[in-house]
Image 1 (cartoon, rainbow, N blue to C red):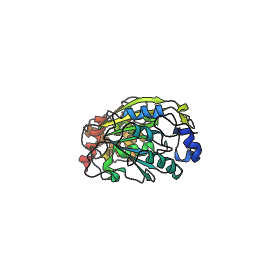
Image 2: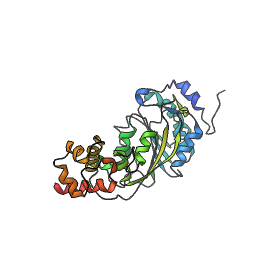
Image 3: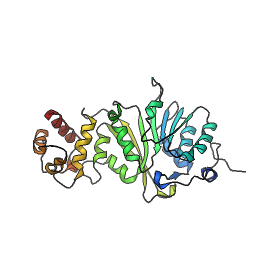
Length: 290
């Protein structure tokens, strides 16, 4: 007889073996099998009672189970790999009416379209993100205006697993080697922290890098500028991060010297030395030019 985990469902190793769920590198899959660890990830997001959770790439459902066992009122799970759907359906049957499975690519599915209107419960995104799409999804969630959203966004918090180096970029401060595009986009109007690290051995198969769980909460913007513009300015500034700004900005903007002067920024500085406030000042100079 198969052994059951504390939540009354079969052990994850048994689920994976029964459904033939070998992780696919092309899908950025690394499965978490330790239910104590997935429960710890879920706790980073805070109490889940009455909360709707959006999960990306649930795979065999280790984190999904932790979210539901932790009291989430509803989990909307978006899974691209059709092989995983049968295993997830078993979880859905165990928690009737609380797990909604969406078969599709997270880059093409808008989770907000599956939320009730009007919203009457908190919404949190909690996910062990596939490595190959994590950064792109994070940028989309941090700049929802690019997909007809507004700030504050439709989500109340993000609790996400990234490669450690990506997590460090999100929380990096000016002057550090990790400071860059993700740092500015995240910290412009949110508070981000690394909750804890996860060793490669916790995954099947083990990745070659350490992972980190990052928690992000929306905040009041430091200043109002068009998100698309900020991303354009930051991308240009960091595209050649070792060059002076007067040179690196030439790839996207005419007469960068005038822009830098208007923003009160020394043109010989490099992008990694600019504070977020200075990047915003540079955006306002671009807007003023029209």
